[in-house]
Image 1: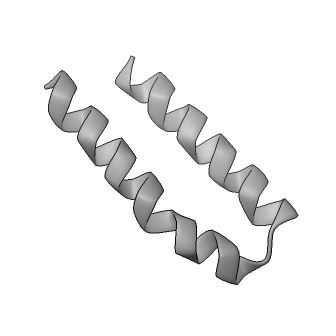
Image 2 (image 1 turned 90 degrees about the vertical axis):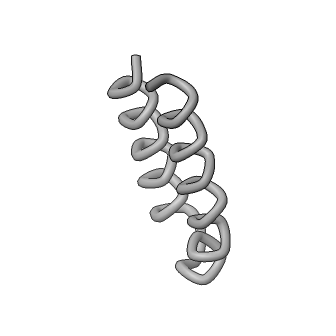
Image 3 (image 1 turned 180 degrees about the vertical axis):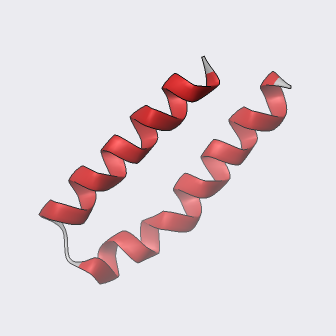
Length: 44
């Protein structure tokens, strides 16, 4: 389940990368990392 979640997040990030300016994505990146980290710590 963790791997599927990470794949989903990276896919969303890739879509962001293509449709948005890099500056906008960079601003959202820490939030996505924190989200992934929180999910990791909850599961394990």
